[in-house]
Length: 316
Image 1: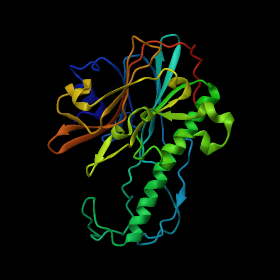
Image 2: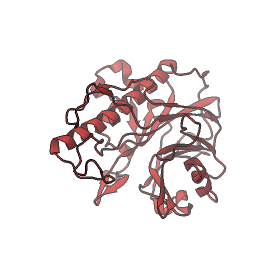
Image 3: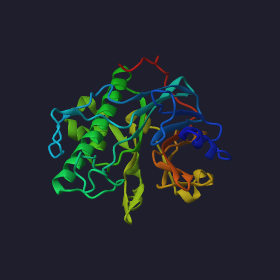
Image 4: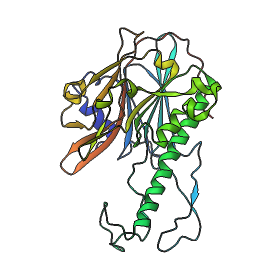
């Protein structure tokens, strides 16, 4: 069976993205993840990539209080999905830092012994034995989601320590609205930190330029929700303009057998008139019949910058 990244390339044949450079998350064996693989396609050269999962934010210890049987000791609550960091080379010796994320969903994490079908549970979604066990599963998922956001923010700040004018975009499926804790943690608005010295480190959500009536990336029971975001540094925001299109008229609509569950938000840097920068962090549901592969994708294409690129140093 082909890997997710291979499928992504195959499904991009015949589109403007077929010849793009590719970076994707990898297992310890160096292969693409079978599910929830993160992919970045770039028209410009990819200078390097890293992925982070509990590297800068160790898994917190937590003892489940509704598990049956009750655990003897607290257990680590680690993230299930890495953060993909890709460095894109721009003209003018600039570097664009892409952080592609897929934060934990709001679906409750399993709690041992707390579904009705124990000891032979049916596949999720299953019925919970008690409301408070469901609430604990929901709480554990929230810890994972906010923990991933915290690690992303730590990495972003380490970049700002190296270059206060870094070109940064954090994009993907946050499984959270722009005012929810995970997105707020990554944004770190001045109103929340209360420290004017951190104003240049704020990340700005690009959807604020979209009319509120159209500001959604996911339809759930007929209701639009904005769970996919593009958060950009203030230096990158200086080049920002917006062009809105729906999946039905976007270049990606030419991909065969592919459905995107979101409208696309396409960015056009104002000061790079000959370039385009298309980016989204939505799920692509790729496959057929019983085989469905979920891939979070960001596509980047930029031509020209104005700042000198500083020597890259590994984030430590």
